[in-house]
Amino acid sequence: MSRFVTKRQVLLYSLASVVPLLFMAMIFNYPLAFPGHYFPGTGLSMLGYIMHAEFLAAATGVLIVLPLLFPVGNRLGWLIRLTIFIVIGYGFTWVAFNVGGTSGMLFYALLVFLTFGGGTLFVFDWLTYVTRAFLSLLRWSVAIFIYVSYQVYFDLDVNIEVWKNTPAALPFGALFFFTLCLCEVSVYPILTWYLENNVKQEKRHEQILAAAEVVEL
Image 1: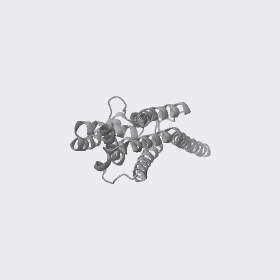
Image 2: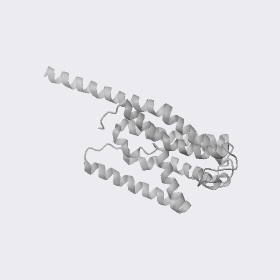
Image 3: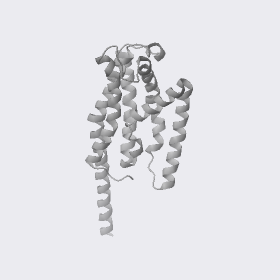
Image 4: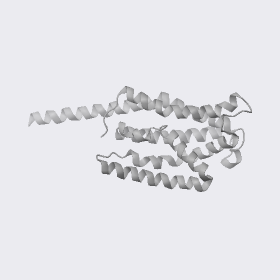
């Protein structure tokens, strides 16, 4: 069982999650604020491809994160968990490579990182098993729901190849990543603290009951 986190750690966790997502939202908002201009190093084709890769990242990323959810009690267990994570991650990044080449592989890995906690995957042992599992499954379901909802809202074709190189990809990506940012700063911190505090209270209750049983004996 992981040690219980403080409010300060939850805040740092949330900030680590939102900063890269906020940067991604800014990249998509830039050409909307300055028509005809793109953030240095980007373009319509790249931004459209990012939204293409995001669907794969959101849909399959939870399978990559899954090994990280299991609690481990020793270094061997940690190594086994890390190995499974690497093997599954390699499998999906290889699929992304076959679909989109090196850029597809890199974008896929980056977007999984963003969608499931903005770079906080490797500090999951800060949190209890209950919190890790709930937040990961919530991020997965929310990302899929938001993606599909905005795709329908902007009347984008089911076939991503049709629209990913069109200007419609820009407002779609801007709103998608901005919404994920809002979730990271408004919803997930509250849930993280609530879940951690709830588990902490349950453990204290169990300890009190155990102590009472010892006294009775």
